[in-house]
Image (cartoon, rainbow, N blue to C red):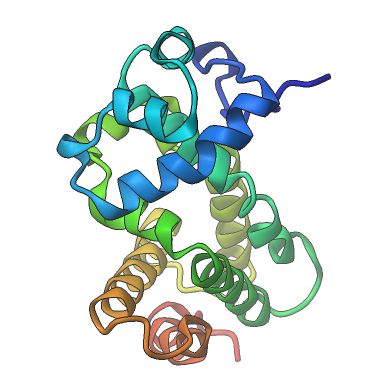
Length: 208
């Protein structure tokens, strides 16, 4: 089929986009939203820059918010499930969780514009209402692995798995923002071990 696979958890809530249209629009949407304030971006500019008619874009997305959220979900399909694959393997939780974090750093180092959009320009109030925000399946696997590690004593049990996941997300978010602020003048992936070392001492369980 010549149609892009639907990346959303809730397929009925998301449009099905023809592959040629996706290929023309994706780099343009990424450039526009990574480089400008969200409120300054508009669908007519995207149509002009991608060589696509405004009517075609409107037919699939209706407004610029739905358009952006669809593309974020599409871009994240290159991150998941690869980034959380280590959690389904055998071995110490410390090693598996470090690899999960490292794969996130690798993805955003390769795709800094996606990071800028997600962490800096996307209107969070609107995005949180969209099915794409939750990344339900990825978060379910992450939380499931963390709860299992808590049961085995690898992660501390006096806080919830959700709190541990939030701490992981917060550390990554801040590290990406500072990488951007400092002009990306060092490899983002080099930060994985340092960040994880700080995080791990806060979440490790009693089992040694």
